[in-house]
Amino acid sequence: MKKTPTGGDPNTAQLITNMIAELGDWRGKVLARLRKVILDAEPDLTEEWEWGTAVWTNDGLVCSAGAFKDHVKVNFFKGASLKDPKRLFNAGLDAKSTRAIDFTEGDTIDEAALKVLIRAAVAYNLAHGKKK
Image (cartoon, rainbow, N blue to C red; front, side, top):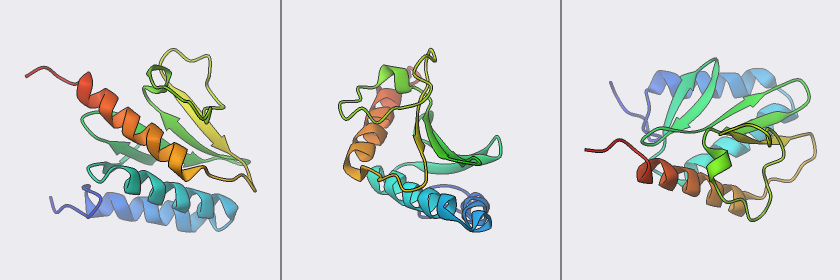
């Protein structure tokens, strides 16, 4: 399989690009911005397409992003295990392992804090990955 600059299958990258383009409103713009921040945060992330949405992995699931009617969600699969000093998590706070950030129209993305969470999620996967 040919790898893209994001580490994944080029067809996967195109599926994500198509999803963003098809939204055609503020959600597409937010999702495109989030995608860039996520990929900039950790160059070893791989883009994947799972459950009909964009997923980023590195030695396990890191996060996913998807658009809904009134918000865009970034879900961290091990979010409950991550420190969130800037209190970005605002959804799924009662879940056992996941945490999410919901963005609504007009919200500002704290890119620096989001990058810290991405890197923490990758570090968590690496620390808790499969034993060799």
